[in-house]
Length: 168
Image 1 (cartoon, one colour):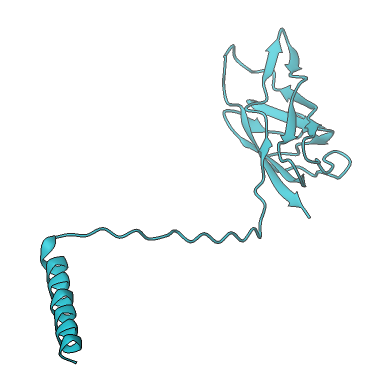
Image 2 (spheres, one colour; image 1 turned 120 degrees about the horizontal axis):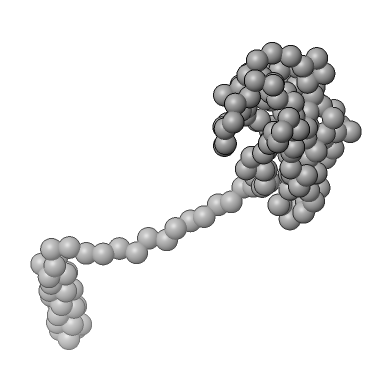
């Protein structure tokens, strides 16, 4: 019985010494904490490439536009759709493509949908259909520029804004 008491006393002393060593051994400590990750994919990001610009050149009175413009859906799955196209004034005022007039004016037509002035174009599903994953939508565009255009280079005549939405 004495041996059991002596053993218990020795164990208690050793535990106290162990605790006191830990408490006084360091001024700082480190802790490793796990990072808990939860992913809830309730949305899908739009991943498209749109043209950086729509070049328009007037060469001896003839208006020339690019023939390689397109919007590409870069996603591996899912489709997108152009739901709105707006054209706003830049260095030139945006005019009516079908009834063109004015000074310092530019008018545009994208996939057959003309400007009527600054603002939204009246687009349709035939001109801007759904763009499936990995597919491009060609953009055919034409421009009219008022005859008072001065010799310039790189003028931001207008701005085009595309609204692109995910198709469910």
